[in-house]
Amino acid sequence: MPTPPPADLPHPRIPVEEARALVVGAVRRVPAERVALAELAGRVLAEPVVAPHDLPRHANSAMDGYAVRAGDPGPWPVADRILAGDDPAPLPAGACAAIATGGVLPDGADAVVPIEQAEEADGAVTASVAPATGDHVRAVGADVRAGDEVLPAGSALGPLAAAAVAGLGLTGAVCAARPRVAVLTTGDELVAPGAPLARGQIHESNSVLVRAALERAGCAVVHVGVVPDDAAATRVAFAAALAGADLVVSTGGVSVGPRDHVKPALAELGVRELFWRIATQPGQPTWCGVAPDGALVAGLPGNPLSCLAGLHLLLVPAVRAMLGADPAPATVRAELAAPVRRLPARLRCLPMRLADGRLEDLGAGVSHQLSRAARANALALVPTGEGELAAGERVDAVVLG
Ligand code: AMP
Ligand code: MG
Image (cartoon, rainbow, N blue to C red; front, side, top):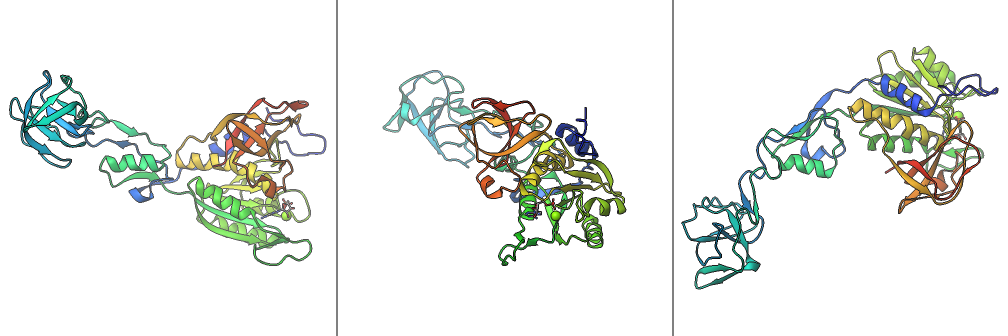
């Protein structure tokens, strides 16, 4: 149920889960493309990865030792010396073959005696214990069988998954294309980092945050623009940003002040509103809509920590939905290291430091406190309620990575 608007808010604010469902439901899926092995980590599979053959392909030794026929402890004359990569001849009856880890088990052998359990003297080997069938042998298909699904569609690939694709002998995989993102920052007070500040000016940081977070989520940022607080300039900037983007994210200018031109500009461009205002603190004046061509448009508030909340609670999930991955934010449940005040009608989204299962409050409770938040690796979600949550109480936290 939407939280009823307080008397001072003419526009309803909606719970963040509802807002997330709206953006996730509104996005269009990106097309699929083939991605080479070296580029796979960080991508999301559009098609499953299936094993083209059994792995291991051939029974091989798990140890340096001797390939034998199981049953008795020898002695066996050494008929061969097999290294990884060799294609060995069959083992003569009653003989053994020295074998290196990964060496193919010769036909006629069914066990390996590790070097530590064997004694080689005068060209013959004796085991300290009689080997059993299968001892120290990596059987055909013990990792995966031909035709098995190794990774389902929608999997977010990391280095390990990319290596598994390589291990199957595949040169790449079919992934969702990177969603194309345009980022606009609005505000006459904004100055590029490195430039001197006149009184009243601040260094622009939101584009760095938005870009890095969305690139990490799998996007390609194709356009970044800085927009003055001017109605016509805002309209022109959004029109340009919308061309060829799957997601347009702006920051600032989305409230109701005389310099807030984002919503009127988007209305003129035919962008249909999904919602404006979410029941969070910070991040309340967050606007989302859908452009006529289906692109998602997000007007995030200008304060950096407000921006952070909308990014991680709404836009990263929306991007995951575009990619065909599970859109739910990656959360952990962890203990508060210190008491935290709750708000009766808004979810507090507090940047905190998560270590050893505890969330350390960094004192970044106000939306401009970017420096205080700089060490945060989690966004603690403090549910609505009266009074405080005590130290030791557990809350969900979105992992910021
Ligand atoms: P606004 O939402 O435009 O009213 O901006 C709210 C606050 O966020 C103001 O103090 C702005 O100066 C600040 N702000 C807006 N955009 C940025 C930005 N790109 N980087 C850093 N701070 C910003
Ligand atoms: Mg502004």
